[in-house]
Image (cartoon, rainbow, N blue to C red):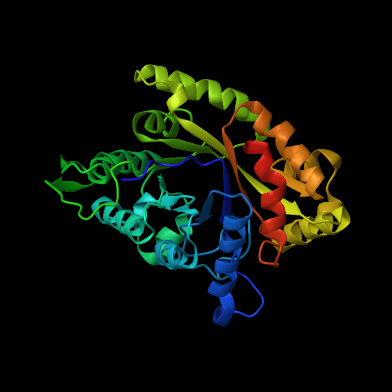
Length: 330
């Protein structure tokens, strides 16, 4: 058995709209993962979606199925951890999900991380035939799912007879280890944070940087409520990074990305511009490192997971980001 590693610097790949189309798409994904592995990132993550998200592009843009992609990346890489950010609980039976991520852990020799959330993209549910339900429904389902998944990952055989799911002495063999990390993602202080305190090894907080100090305080309270040492629960923040050796190029890429989602950045007033870019870190490597240090890392989170939607597919960009940012979280 191997000891679970921490997530200090993650690289998320949420965009698959690359030059060359399907014929070279996975090659481009694998190249990014290998650059991340060689430049200081400890984890590579893909989205668990079937359509592209509205804040990135149009629904019909390319989107690879997450666990097929991660399985292929297990053979394309050697040391980097592999995960989603995050798995939509509503898309899979929980026992099947436990089996899927455990198999990924076996084929990658102990590099899988199970990241999971309640699910939120209603269009996917409607068009693919998954039950969406209410907000409360989805969190009830997530709680029941974790009651099945967590023991299966730890070598136990859960019995569960709930409203949404059932399991009866469910087996999960083979396993590479019994400490496969569980990560939750989100910013909900009442539901997500309580579940993280109960079940998770790691929480990725998806919120505005200015909210991070308070989010960490509330998370510590949730840990106290269940008798858990807050120091045992790792945290990270999600950030969009647009980096280039030429800062003007980076800022142009940001404007072009916003235009793809229907936003004319130059037409916004100063307040709207600030709000639109609050979670976007743009400029030269030094610019981005300074912004992430001040706005994110100095708040007390343990790590950062970045995506590079605009130019991560360009050879050398992920390597540049890794070498620049890894020292910040060492």
